[in-house]
Length: 104
Length: 146
Ligand SMILES: Nc1ncnc2c1ncn2[C@@H]1O[C@H](COP(=O)(O)OP(=O)(O)OP(=O)(O)O)[C@@H](O)[C@H]1O
Ligand SMILES: [Mg+2]
View 1 (cartoon, rainbow over the protein chains, first blue to last red):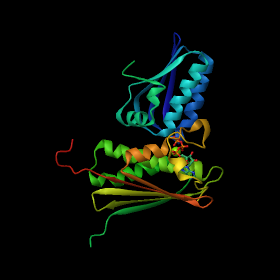
View 2: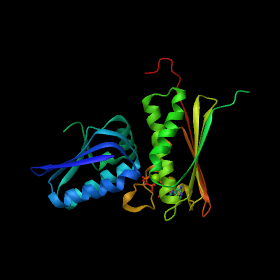
View 3: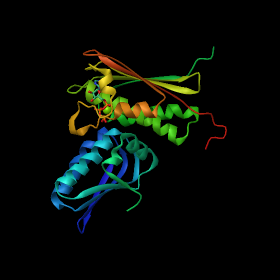
View 4: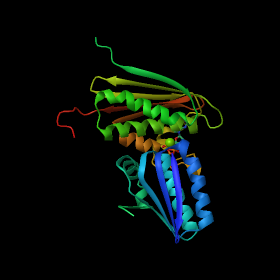
């Protein structure tokens, strides 16, 4: 998995590429935590357009990012979710906690 | 009698093998001519079972994970993931959505996902001896399939 972070005008964009599983999650969580701590963004957008696979480890990543953003007084949401990750997000009921938006 | 196709894998509980295991089973399942969605369901369920064996069965050691997949008579697949690790003291509790012993890194949704993405899920476990997870899924026939 690849994860890129870009910050501009109070908004942190997290772009996920490839497969987000337990193996990839730890590094992703670390990278996201560091980016939030250093930029203290108002908005954090998780872009899943290039995420080809996700399992329950990804749910914990999304929830953890949401919690971290709430702690710094901001908010996080997910955009551009392909079919397989969407099925996992739906099964988990996480959309009741973190917004899954249509597009950016 | 027509012998049914099967595969057997054994690998150490290293997280790098999670991707290998789910991709291998997906490749094997491809001969049933599944839809992309069905293939995604199988991949996800295998990932959950193998991750559980990696994370929960062998928390502080590297143990063996055994995986079997076989074609079934109803144009389906049966997948068995077995470990000889910690075991699950209360299976009903473990199956409940959001139950986890894994802390912040886990969401307690693995069994719920296996259950909803596959047709059947059976868990057998003995505390201190290990866990066997058996999942089945029937693949719909191609005629008129999207
Ligand atoms: N192979 C196993 N060996 C020992 N305990 C297990 C095993 N599989 C599951 N468990 C136990 O069952 C609980 C529920 O598993 P489940 O996969 O539903 O959630 P999780 O692994 O905790 O979180 P998630 O799958 O969402 O990351 C686990 O927290 C663990 O206590
Ligand atoms: Mg799990």
